[in-house]
Length: 361
Picture 1 (tube, rainbow, N blue to C red):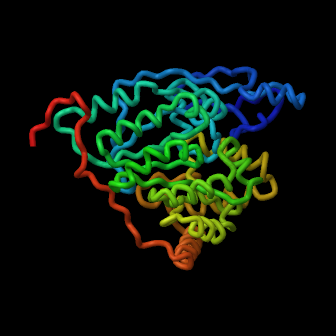
Picture 2: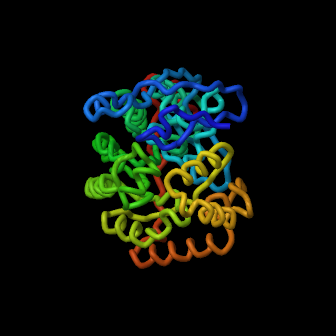
Picture 3: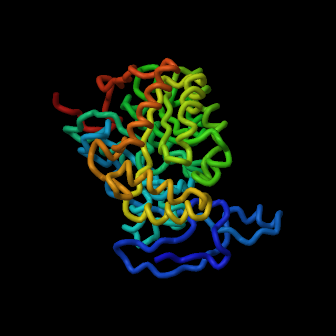
């Protein structure tokens, strides 16, 4: 079941609707103003959907996982929901836990965790804490637009720098350049690695896939600037969607390599839970000429389903199309002189935060 705005598709947003949650009786809601009201006043457009930020006070900030196909065991998410509005985002269903829709609510009703740095300092100071790289950007982008004002990611980075704690950062925003001073400090001791997501080099494709994420050119420029600053940076073509952006594999790999990326990886599109119907609606709106073809190819790569949650295959898929994409990617990577380098961050420099109880060794 879907709830649509009376104005139709919401311009400048990723989802075409507010899909009902799996778990709660989510009521229909009217679309209200916009955080881009000023633009609407200028061009005479109808009011747009306003981004709201609510404060969340969790008891802890480090999330731990034991997934065998994920390269980290600890992560921090400064925000819930993401204003970038990427239609394919596998994190969308988590908004159901708050009785909110994985659709437009996910990209307009955000949660910020202003206590993140304080909680991190407390957790890092606990006796028995085991140092392992902390990943940021695993669920929602740490440098989405609201970070400009909230600066939660910056606060967390400063704690990590103070304690010489290793971290991985994934983002599709050039806003990360604001923190290049802290990142360069961490990089000098091999304590940070950055991954910039470049899904497409075509601004028209990016505008519908990731409506409020920075222009692809700005992401490429961010890779260049991070590399020049001595910060280990790689790229991620995530996700690859058949018949939408798979034709760009060779161009994306070559471009990020030329920009200074140390490596590039990819993930096939994943459509868990409510993401699948949202994605179908998006296809019908933006690519009606090939919607059936796209879903047929996805089903071929996912064992006949919209999504395959199986560890290992969920990232790379299976079948003829998945094999073809894998072969093309490996070849493009090799041609660009990438692959084979595995960056290992240091963990031996960690020191507990000031005021923390001394740890017994």
